[in-house]
Image 1 (cartoon, rainbow, N blue to C red):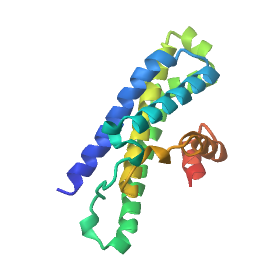
Image 2 (tube, helix red, strand yellow; image 1 turned 90 degrees about the vertical axis):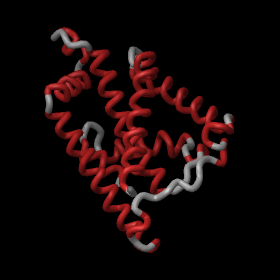
Image 3 (cartoon, rainbow, N blue to C red; image 1 turned 90 degrees about the horizontal axis):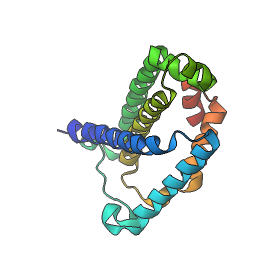
Image 4 (cartoon, rainbow, N blue to C red; image 1 turned 135 degrees about the vertical axis):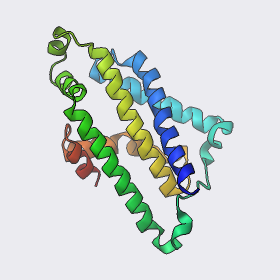
Length: 191
């Protein structure tokens, strides 16, 4: 009983993020990289403002409180952080394995080729746009899993938590520090 709501919430977070990425990707992924970044930052800020202003969505700027912690009854409050760390490391291991398998697949090789030279991939007959959409949706689903784990760890969420610095630039800096284009580098940069 303690696992089911936790797993359902993670799957729903991944699915909703993937759906939102599909909608956004269909309208923005034809833009050049710099314009794409500007458009997505603008959409993120618009969504943050809507969540703050609309009290019925997530209680406005006060956010959501009382998010239950998964498996909290299994250990004492003082030891819960260790149980949750094990859960997060297990999720990280599963995600890492999925990403590595995806990158080694023909699909992942096409995505790496698009990163290097879109024109060559297009000349080989691949639909660059649809591969970009797939990668964008896959990445958003993974971010949904991370967001769900973050909300369970915090026990509460507020739109004020996700400022421009925390919500965008610090993650970008983590990728740069760890080495963009490297899965293990991204994990090291986040650490």
